[in-house]
Length: 483
DNA sequence: TGAAATGTTGGGGCG
DNA sequence: ACGCCCCAACATTTC
Image 1 (tube, helix red, strand yellow):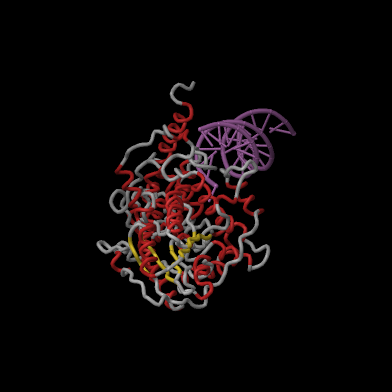
Image 2 (cartoon, chains in turn red, cyan, brown; image 1 turned 120 degrees about the vertical axis):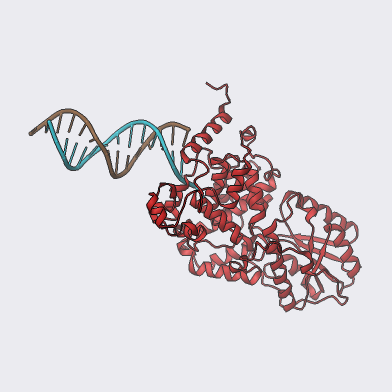
């Protein structure tokens, strides 16, 4: 029989918060001592260990979580290694009789976690998992015929008519520390933040990782932007979106909390449905990845497998660095590099440009975003790239090709976004800020722009690239034998 | 969660 | 006065 004062381990993963955390709440029940544990286990993530920007975020989020735990009388224990071995080790060291965690849904991780649960139980430990990460877990939403949804709209409709997510529980008011302290590693020794060079130097101007920062961001969004969300969310120069994505990815706030906070504003709030629908896309991505585990690596539609992608390292480099010669694309890629984040509208434009204008495989774009986004999320990154490429479920048709000039003129009409992130173009008149190559030479000179020197000429011509992409798509669809 | 090409309509200039 | 043409403006189709 376990001692009634045996500690319980809370294995923190992508649920780095105290409120709305069922695993933590369950562990703390009955006044039991709690050992909050985080394990750095790059090998257990199916080849998708956290990228650079994510590691920066993780560092700060873990620091914030530790601080918050200290406020309740506990400390976060940091360990490194294969999760199963670490959990058994910490349990043995501490005399813990239970391990609680909140579920993740990535294929490699669900497989690992279910093995771990079996092993822990066979060792006589209590092992329980909970939902903290989704409004609707993937196996709870099914089509009429019992299969997974492949189209967003019916998926979301099914979610909205399913039993609503339970209201979030508050954080425990205090935690009991174990009588025997458990050793951990020092966060600084993990070297999660970059040093040479410190490309994340500017990140902290834009972000406050941790539960308090997440809550702050949500409150600010609900107060200042939700009601105009429908109009403003597509304008990248404006703070019209919630910017909660990294907080949600690391579980510093849960979708149930966001959901409940929106509902609490009352019925018929303008923007509320449109915003919750975006949470729905997040759910849909996790649903897809859960049911189609190869989503991050393989075309969802196998028809795309023979697509004639090009190998063009120079173009890929220009795209990554924001030197394509298309201002809205370059501004986006530089916002990403400078802040670890890119506005959603611009993600679509830049991704479309890589896949359609440059004919570079979506997998390479996925890799870059994985490494550079602070909100990099396996499900959403994979589902979104496949959506843009046209190879995904419920995807944009391949022949929908964004015109980067028109997109710029439509969503950044005064060029404020371009001027901010591509300052060498800042002085151009509105009429040319999205197409400097069309600007009369004397105007360029007066604005300090020298094409090919201070700012690149377009690396591809839009009209020609569009024709090339359509031809590639046609070849895929019909093959050369088609009449 | 497009854009471009093509088709249609109707006002107005003009012979 | 009338028909013809041009071409925005808008709608539809195609990619």
